[in-house]
Image 1 (cartoon, rainbow, N blue to C red):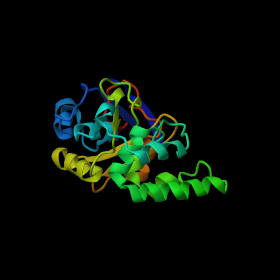
Image 2 (image 1 turned 30 degrees about the vertical axis):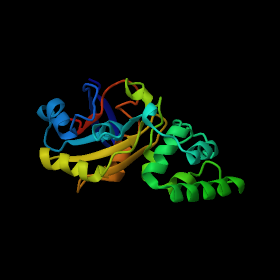
Image 3 (image 1 turned 120 degrees about the horizontal axis):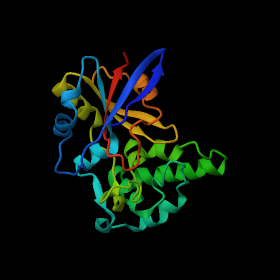
Length: 226
């Protein structure tokens, strides 16, 4: 178990990533937290949940050999810019998932505006993903996860992350948040319980103490250090 300290607003916080087994669609995130974390909670704790493992428990990991990639996806993926934190939609399989999630009209519009933005010099501004919507931005292409069997799956973003975080908060009596974090400084709270502080959580988790490799640490406890 890793324990890492960080200072936010002159207060030191302990982040405690908790290792679990490999999750599947047969799991429920509340039960996983109960199994691996509930006996460690203290008053004032906050729990964070990584977005991809939550999505996996919702059946959102789609094996690439089960995807039927249409003509639109085969064309559009080539126009998606490379991003430094992963493949994203620059693969026909993940593009197909974006079309399935967001609809072909919205993806076409986002692609058109994104292409126009690059033409006028707005490279790297994220116009495509902003217009396509959060679910498109959350899609992890196959090979993003190093954990079998998910290295051969496209993982869509979780459904209703805010409601899931509130369900966790209601069960355990602590604040909860679902986080999308990478190893190059990207950190976003995509859903939180009623009193979860987005600004604070994005600061306290910005260096990704859970990692994004094969650590198998989908949940993390945040606690004021003594």
